Amino acid sequence: MLANFLIGLREGLEAALVVGILVAYLVKSDRRDRLPQLWLGIGVAVVVSLGFGALLTFGPRGLDDDVQEGIGGTLSILAVALITWMIFWMGKTARFLKGNLQHKLDDAVDAGKWAVAIMAMLAVGREGLETALFLWAGAQATGHTTDPLLGAVLGLVVAIGLGYLVYRGAVRLNLKTFFSWTGLVLIVIAAGVLAYGVHDLQEAGWLPGLHSLAFDVSAQVPPSSWYGTLLKGIFNFSPATTWLQAIAWVAYAVPTLILFVRTAFARPRPAAPAPTQAHAVAA
Image (cartoon, rainbow, N blue to C red; front, side):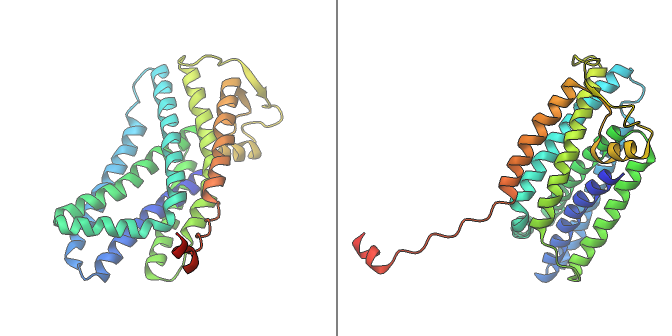
């Protein structure tokens, strides 16, 4: 539940900030006549995202178990790839998010009112599709219960509230700091989703090594215990982990965390000093 809460909070806040920036810019630039098209594009993006989530949830039902496991494992790995790209992209561009969106909105306004709707649909729709896919993968990894959905809904509700407060100026949020630290946690969560996806592919017979265990601590960490449930809900930890799962987790988590820390937390290089007049003349 906690993992899905964090996913819902981060992804929801990103979408809420996008909406807030677009709405505020149209209002401040005295182009309120474009607001209906903006809200239309946002509404279409929300509907498409919900439909995508429903397709992921109900689409594979009725298929053979092996096929369902194969589809689930493939989509889980795809979700990890997308969320990893998003984490690095946002870690680098969070501070420029407002300026980039305003520039794109200016171009859309110049192109026509329906271009505003398309621009809003693409900007919000990308966030919605990523959120739906990763939430679905996270729910699959933690089990078919209502807890993951509840955590995601709570995260989205908090994100909408924070986004509104930021829009009204009641809260100031350092986007780079927020997305950098939540990115670290999401990488760990994504590593668990990746390991779960590998296990699904093993159960489907698409990958070998289903019965080759790296460790089995089921006796020490029973899946039904409160701490087993906590580890499963936050890190997608499996007491019985195959060698292929363990290798996939380490091969993803370790280099990704190192690279992310180096890029997201790197201090900006100081600007080179301007050449003195004597140097300029000599040159």
